[in-house]
Image (cartoon, rainbow, N blue to C red; front, side, top):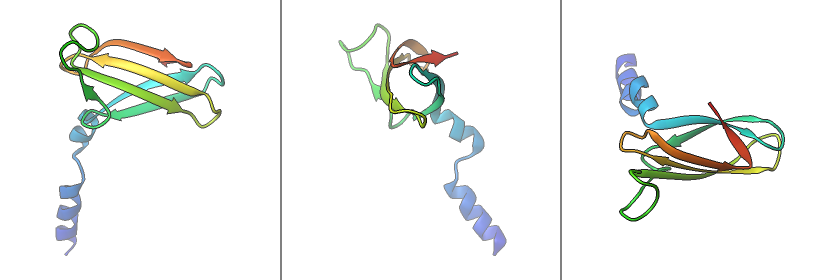
Length: 100
């Protein structure tokens, strides 16, 4: 029975490699309190496709995200444009800074 349950668990759980490729992760720092926040976004639901005439040159995807840390009430606004392979073309942030 243990083998069946293990197989069922593996069927519904993403493989380690698949899990990482479904997300984009970046770090930001709050300008108000200095908290470092790790932001994880799903490629298939958090990021939108850019249509012709919208957005930056050569951008295929767009993310607009508001981030609230745990230490203070400062809302951080991010906008990121991505190329075809989800490479970052441009990024903008208000209320914080991107940590490289």
